Amino acid sequence: MQITFYGAVREVTGSMHLVANGEDRVLLDCGLFQGRRSESAEKNRVLPFDPRILTNLVLSHAHIDHSGRIPLLTQKGFSGRVVCTRPTHSACTYLLPDSASIQESDAAYLNYKTVRQALTRRAAANQAGMTPEEARALLKKGRHELNTDAIDDLLASLRLDTVRPLYTLKDAEAALSVFEGFPYEHTIEIGREMTCTFYDAGHILGSAISLISERRNGRATRIGFTGDLGRFGKPILNDPQLTFPDAERDVDLLVMESTYGDRLHEPVADLKGQLLDVLQTALQRGGTVLIPAFAFGRTQVLLYVLHELYNERRLPRVPIYVDSPLAVHLTQVFAEHPEAYDRDTQTTFLAKGQNPFSFDQIHFVRSVEESMTLNRDETPKIIIAASGMCEAGRILHHLRFKIHNERNTILIVGYMAENTLGRRIEEEGRAYERSGRKGPAPVLRFFNKEYPLKAHVAKIGGFSGHADQAEMLRFLKGCNLRIKAIALVHGEEQQALHFADVLRREGYSVSVPRRGETLKVG
Image 1 (tube, helix red, strand yellow):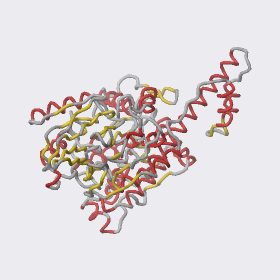
Image 2: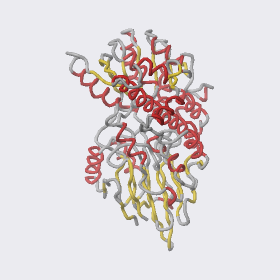
Image 3: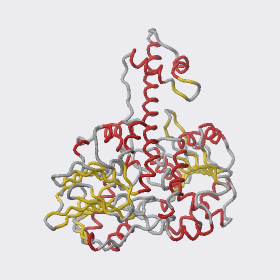
Image 4: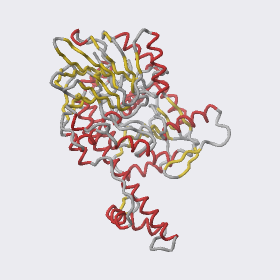
């Protein structure tokens, strides 16, 4: 076998690796690149191979940086199966259509801007153009809906460049038709001489460590793929699996994530206390706590811990809003898979007949009108909104109304990739906090406007769904796998190279591949 690394290589998005054995080609993940719009758009549109050569695809978990380009595969001729766990299949039925809607709305907005600018430029040049106000009136239906028919007509008649969505809702639905979900520890044929078995990775609901095996002439060659490896002792989910069957213990190459390869998280045991401190401080100022969070995984862990704090009567009874229709659906997916919960969740909530993710103070916001009303509400509250890296979604509108008020707090609870608005808020806001908030506040630009970052910025790293350096070492040393070599992926270059040095000192054979690099296995 051989494996070629195409995504999440010396970076943390766009997970994609191709396993081939001469007869079959199996793709591990097919994720979206995230970051600067122009760079990520170019990366996402260009596939490094013809999808028609693929036999099947093995999906480690549902997060969009691992699953988000699957509709592009089927759009371009992929005819195999997408093999994953059952909860991953359930989650993707919401995540992929949501991603398609974002692709379509982003393309529509960029086309609107192109036409509007063309019309106003023509007016300035005394040609048949319009004022900005006239252009907006023509190109919009009311305040928020775009007149796509008028925009498309003008794009054609003015011969303007048109932005096409990466894929459409129809493409996402077509991709979902080739998904097949399986339980953990069930062996699946993925090629004529290849099988895959899933084991619990503990990262999010349904996340899997995949063991890909090829058997020829009585000898097995095996590639392990951690996907995203979870934390130990994290609420709701089981820890990453450490005990594997004797028949699958020998691993020729382990493809392992390295997101936090150069750092340690706060202990999981401190999560509740740290969250309580941040919330109490902000609420005592009369402010709102705004939490950018991934709709799948992070939102549900936050709800779980908040539920515990409310049950313990340690937190003021302010309302909690989950402002993400996607998060509402995915919270239901969590509710439908209690078999994946750890023992603490079973005893703390289920044994008492309680839903871990629903209690009196929780309000799930569904409509745009509800969200807009919430934007302008200045009373103390907690808002959890997507997207987790502040690149799209309703979180941007909440930031627009809350970022300039020093009573409010923006709480960072997850990884912010390079070149995202979330990373800028984290770095510049935390630096401003460390300086004692002296001098003018940092200024951030989004929605084509500049906003002073006067809101407080706090961070709790313990909520991360990714194992830190110590936990990744715990997995390697604590599991019963016999690992010949490790390839580190899914980590920015600094983190991956640092973790490689750590592992070499521990006696492991380690490489940090570059994009397009191929390793022979076995």
